Image (cartoon, rainbow, N blue to C red; front, top):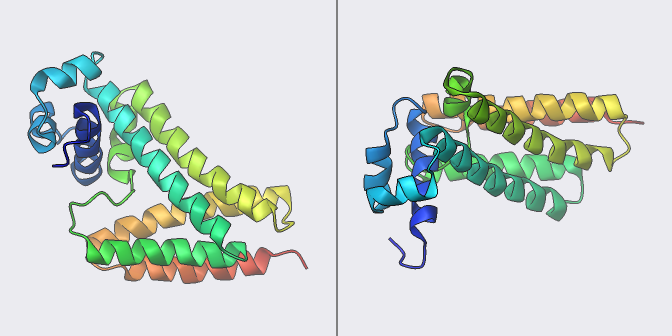
Length: 194
């Protein structure tokens, strides 16, 4: 484990990965501490409000990482369609080269549990999806799509990518993500203003 990472960062990294893989209820604080190689007291020091607070910060960590990835990929592309294709294909390639337990950026496992955990975690998950959606929306609007079309497309894109991640994980290959990319690009082009 790199020595330059703080105990808090190691805890958040481990929590993020474990929560994505196992969900909220199946992930215990002792497991997070063991995986992070941090002292148990660190968890209570950095997250005195408990496990839900830790989970919320771990989701926010994932949100920032994925948001930066989406934004930089879209910014580097000549068109929104090219950027979207590149982002999804890079995600597919990442999934195929990493183990099933690596951090893959999907919060679906924890998001599905969040309404039964607490309002803090639920709103963090909701805000995470919304932040990703808004990045897509702003990129779509730059290509002169109508506001409603940009709203609709960004919602479908966000949901389809998350669903593609889930299906790819279940199938243990990224074919669902590649199909998602193909169909989303067709939808974007169909809605493109003439």
